[in-house]
Length: 99
Image (cartoon, rainbow, N blue to C red; front, side, top):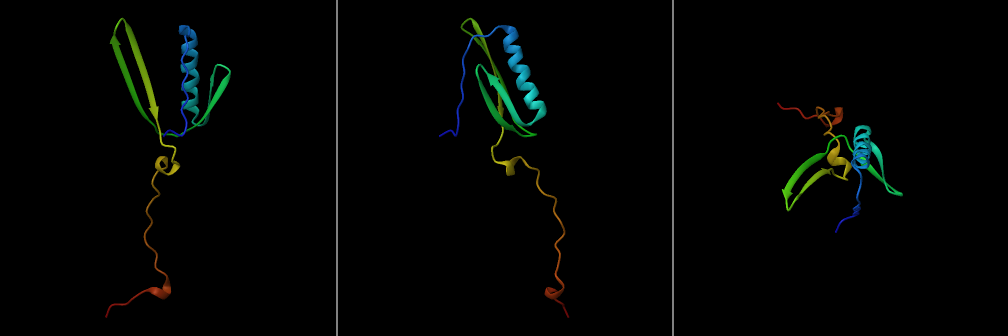
């Protein structure tokens, strides 16, 4: 089951579609808390520095379909870089000696 699904279908002019894509591009450029306006509503998203993309074009039945898919994890630990490894430290009282 999905945590959230938002879907909107509408007819737009070429300029309106470009404006929506520009707003999406700016939200991606900024990262962090992104807000996208859709009609009378606003969709707020946490946008990480790294994401996966898929672009699909289908031509048939007298029309062209272009899908741009962006995916990222909602788990912050998966998006964060791995911490640098530090050398193990020994406490003075626990050192062992070999004869």
